[in-house]
Amino acid sequence: MWRHGTSAHLTASCIVLDADRTHVLLTLHAKIGLWLPFGGHFEPEDISIRDAAERETREESGLSGVQLGELVDLDRHALPTSAYSHCTEHLDLRFVGVDPAGRTEPVVSDESDDVRWWPLDALPTPIGADVGRLVRAGIAGVIAPRP
Image (cartoon, rainbow, N blue to C red):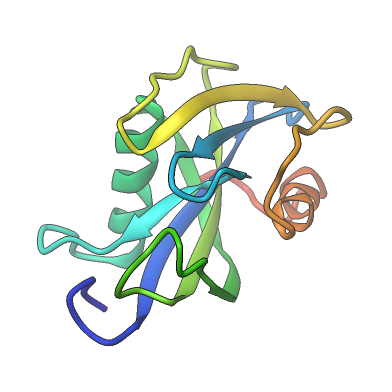
């Protein structure tokens, strides 16, 4: 679970859609160079998987009002060894969230080269291989934001 543990780490992430589900907010990950959802390692202050996903989303996007739906995906993916020295694999617990305000202006964190909203019919490249699948789950109505 902790980044100083084994080479495979449990992580939490969130793909963020606008209220109309016509745009997705993605981060251009500084180490990996792909457009991805927000996410990362657990921190001691996280009391749940949901807390970790919410915190990572807030830290990496600057958005504080994202409403997370239920856990929708579990993913196991290898990490490029050129980007990470100790961590070689993420076991990622994934949520889809909605920005109820529409498309709030994001803030680029030090973990990203860029953060921006993308129309669902014009996703950026290079993009993580599974981002399309997560977007489709959100726009299909699988994810309902919590009140």
